Image (cartoon, rainbow over all chains, first blue to last red; front, side, top):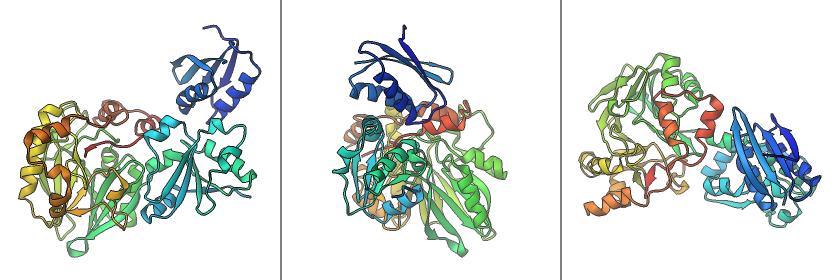
Amino acid sequence: MNATKVLDAKGLACPMPIVKTRKEMKTMESGEVLEILATDKGAQADLAAWAKSGGHELMDSQTEGDVFKFWIKKG
Amino acid sequence: MTVTAMTASEVAKKVVNNQPLFILDVRNGDAFSDWKIEGGNIQYLNTPYFDLLDGVEEVVSELPTDRDILVVCAKEGSSVMVAEMLSEEGVQAAYLQGGMKAWSEHLEPVKVGELSNGGELYQFVRLGKGCLSYMVISEGEAAVVDATRMANIFLDFAQEKGATIKHVFDTHLHADHISGGRAIAEATGAMYYLPPKDAEGVVFEYAALENGLEVEIGSSKLEIEALYSPGHTIGSTSFIVDSKYLLTGDILFIDSIGRPDLAGLAEDWVGDLRESLYSRYQDLANELIVLPAHFMIIDELNEDGSVAKKLGDLFKENHGLNISDEQEFRDMVTKNLPPQPNAYQDIRKTNMGQITPDEEIQREMEIGPNRCAVR
C-alpha cells in the first residue's frame, strides 16, 4: 500500500504510539495515508478506535513478526 | 499537586470492604465493556485516553469531589498521563499501578477455615478474573488446588507458612486461565495430579487424579479425597477436604453452575453435568462448605472477601440446582451461553504443554473475564 508518510513507533508504550500518530496526522492533508509501525500490542485496538473517533479510516493492518503495521487515511 | 499510585492490592481491599471509589477508565470502549474492575461501591466513567489528548476539561465536570478517583488503563502509561493532566487542573487522582495487567494478576489470600489439628485452608481470590485457588496447610506440609499462573505467589506463601508443598492438583484442564500447577510441582518436587480423561493431549508426566484418590497432609494425616464429578469437562473432579469443605472446581459455583461447552462437547457432557449436580452432590452432607474455582459477580463474595457457602444453602438458593425438568436444564446449559473466554483454545493447549508462549503472551491470553459459568 502506498503511504504518504511512515511513522516508526516501535518500542514505544501506550499512550505514545497514538500521541505520535496524532501529531503526525496534523501535518498531513485529508486523503493522505500514514503508515505506522508499532510493537505495543495495545496499539492494535486503540489505533482502530482512535481512527474511528477522529473520522479517519483504518485501511489495513498487518503483523510481521513482532511488528504491527497500520495504514490510516486522514479524514 | 502530586499524582499517586494505587496498587492492585489497595484496590482489592476497597472492593472487599465495599468502600467508595470512582474509576475513570481510559481504555478504549470495547476493552472497558468487555472487562473492568468490579465492585459494589464503584462508579465509572469510560473516556479513552486518546480523546483526552487535547485536555481533560470536559471530564473534570463529571468527576465527583466526595470519593477517591482512580484512573485505569491497560498497562499504566496512559493512566499516569491522564492523572497528571487532571492534577494540572487541580483534581487529585491516583493511577492504577501496573494497570489492568496488574489487576488481572493480583491474588488476595483469605483464610477460609481451620482444619483438624491446627491445619488451615486458604483461598486465593483473583478479583480481576474471578479465579479461586486453594492451599491446604497442615503440620508443615501443603497441597495446592487450581493454582493460577502466578506460581511464585503460592511458593512464597507456603514458605511464609513454613510448609512444603507436597501435592498439586487441578480439578480439570482449565480453559479460562493458565495453570500454575506444573510450575509449582517442578519448583518443589511435588506430585502434579490431573484427571486422566482431561489429559489426553498432555505432553508431560502427571499423576492420575481418579475418583476415590486420597492423599494425606502432615503427620496427623489431614485427608483430601477426590470425587469424580464430570460435566464442565469430562474429567472434572471435586475434593472433600477434612470432611468439611467441598472444592467443586468449575462444576458448581455460588450463584451459577459450570458450562459444558469449553472443550467443544456441550451436548455430550450435559448429562454428566446433571448427574454430578443432581445425583453425586445430592449424596453429600449438606453441611459441607462449597469452595468453587470461580466467582462471576462481586455479590458472590462474603463480607470477609471469601467465596464460600454451605452445600445445603446452595441446594435451596442456586437456580442451577433447582431445575427439575431435564430438558429445561439441557437447554439452559447448551443454549444462549455467554461468549467463550479469551484465547480459550490456546489456553487449553498451554495447560497441556503443547505450546509454551512467553510470559507477555500468556498475560495477553488471560485478559478479560473468565466466563466459565451459566446462570
